[in-house]
Picture 1 (cartoon, rainbow, N blue to C red):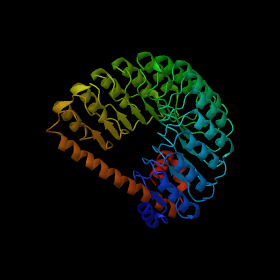
Picture 2: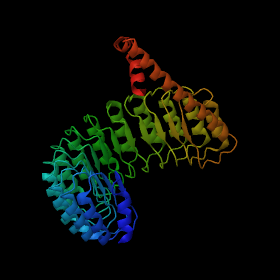
Picture 3: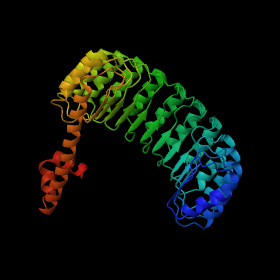
Picture 4: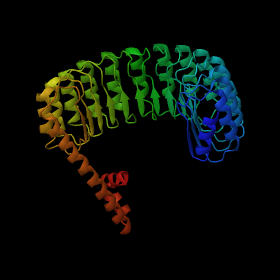
Length: 444
């Protein structure tokens, strides 16, 4: 007990109470809770990877009914269980300060989630609730869905690595048709199949708030990808979509490529660890030639060879928006690297290119090094696990030059904007050349 008391004496006046991995049991948590009842300075409490259990959670819950300064509590991996979730839910009905609550990896099942869902119907402060890696199934998802129809403050809900299936997803999808505040939704590593994705896709056609959706490691496949692609043609808010590890193959890739030709909102698409081969990549590349919104594309850990890399290279010669392309752990080889190198001589948008573990060798590295003699925008090129020797230092040196020049350009843009402000000519420049104006303003 002396150890935790000494720690509190040192940190209780700090803005952040960092007690991660501190061996804190329920008795030490009770001491902490008593201190939090009178504390008026700490706003963040980090307690993950301890063992406070139900009794520790109850003590903290009592403190939360009184404390008015804590805005963030991280209780991940603390053996809290349903009983602990229930007492924390009661505190949420009264607390007027907490905006972030993390309860991942705590063996919370439907009973605990139902209590939290009831609290969300009343709470008007909480914006982020993390319930990843618990024991939530369709029944728990249904309870949360009912809460989302009423709650108007929650912006982030993390339900990854639970046991939610199609029925639970359907209930959540119905809530998304009504909810107007949730912007980030994590549903990765559940048991969502085609029917659940179809319902979710229908909701995306109507929803006007969701910006980020995680669906990695479910059972989506080509049919699910097709449904989501149709939604992307109509959705006007989703900017980030994670579909990694979902057995998406040729047909699904083609459908998503078709959506990219129409969608201008999506900025990040994650297709890592699927069944994307050269044919799939060619379809996606055709979409990239037309798309004007996507900035990040993850294609790592697929089956992309030289032909797929060549298709992407052709797209990069005309695409002006993609800034990050990740292709690590494919089989593009030296030939694929050569094609990408030729694209880098023309492309002026790509900043990050990840090519680790692609059998590129010194020959492929030579092509890339030659391209960097003219390319001035690429600042990060990952080439690990490619048996590259002679050209790595040359590539690293050129990337450093690009980084330095980019910093110099940023400083110049800031100086130009400041000077334009002094001369009162901002609006004039904006009307004469909106592109230059937007570039300077973005950097500033």
